[in-house]
Image (tube, rainbow, N blue to C red):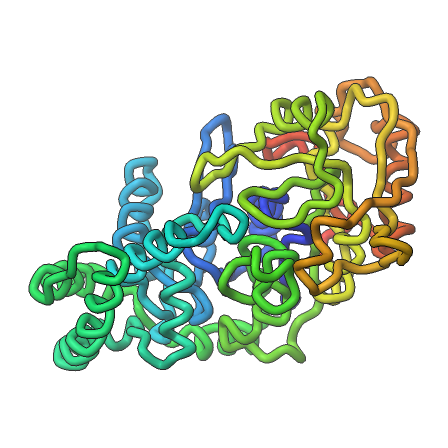
Length: 431
């Protein structure tokens, strides 16, 4: 029995979906524990491309149990569409294969309208870069105790009461943004239709996971976004609306932290970021353009272009500390092929100070200057490498330097988007 958490070690888009898919082969249960459909995992399996927004990517395996925990905020329309798309691919999603936490909060139509409206009101330098999916306003209502949970949706009278109370307030706010009010009947009828379809999937995820643990099953916890987007520990305010670090795997699913065995941090071999916010190692030259093109750096959910830069060791080391990362999965090594020299940021300079960690003051972000260490690159195509020794000596040295700098061993190396283009150096479920 082993319980493993997978988290992003940068600003998201590190390739978590592929690594989760790889590890799911050895797991019995796969759990999504935070975020909403503002995140997306892209997988390429047998030449087919799958994009997941809410459902754990473990659903691609017929004999795995998938869970969406209480820490996730759910847009029913998006979830049902995702189910339909999987069914069209010959992968029907049934209650036997997917359980939704009765405590998960619902994204309502007013959340999405308020998300877009509030972002539009911000001046250019204050914009967060929200996806407009309603994630932030939904988490806000959760904290303010105005939220609507899945269990509320299944109680017709309770849902009616909560919806009426919320619409009174939300329509007032919508008018402030110059938006049309929502009518009770339209929202109510739509969500009652959702309730009928989702009811068979709703259950007590915490209890189900504990029973699985007691039965000796392997459990894999799947995070969304990345460490530097954490609402508490990321580059606030340019962050997401949930805790993305490993500790939230337990809070967001109702699983005891004493039962976690391994935390794997997914680290892209270079660094990317989508949306607004600080990015010390960002490249504004041809090298950045080349990384973007070769790496296919476009958001799975929004299609937005990702900003690209050299590997930020400060961010990587922050992730190790904040998540308690025990192992690294280094992805997209193949994208670096062809660069004679690679750079690794080992610290920042801010004025006369040297910083070993990302600062918390947003005024400091724009003045950070990365201090680089130069490393030799390689010219060979490494996408066919299947063992560590298949890699050029300089590629092996690059990996070794990352391990030394972060004081964390690599357990997985990825040299391409396909399942087969992966080296599993240590299987966390086999120990």
